[in-house]
Image (cartoon, rainbow over all chains, first blue to last red):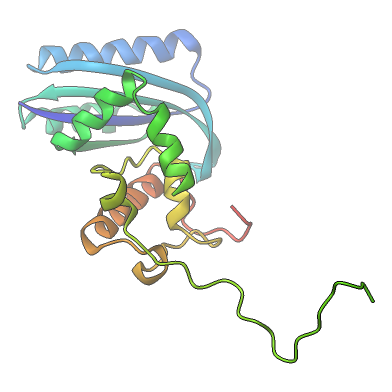
Length: 119
Length: 87
């Protein structure tokens, strides 16, 4: 059961409940494929650094989940078929990354950010 | 002429080039998050290009992690591929 992190950019024309609906859809899909979602973190509307498909803003969604290694291929098929999604990326998290996300979620980084800032 | 301003013939060398260190080893940072844009911006120049190791002072292992994270951030439109404005 590896841990993965999925980041998705939806088209900005997506309404709020569509956004929620597709979040739920993919979380259920992961659960159905034998995975388990750990944390979902919708960033909402953000401006992109460069236009994608002629759009300069997108709705970001970051989801951390665990699952068997063949879950990503099925996820990818679903996402490529879904035209609401402009771009998606699944990254594998090693143990440092999982620990980093865990600490970040519990607000443990207030001090370290200052360290990074003055570094 | 201000009274206390002393004129030197040759300019005195003020700041000693500060000793570079690998911030990842020093602060024990093990994972470079590609979503943490403010932190990644320390490793790219104004054009959005990656800084070489001699400037960023990273060790090889962490320079590769930074490079990997910057490329992921660029892929997900968090960082521009090329830009000319001062970031």
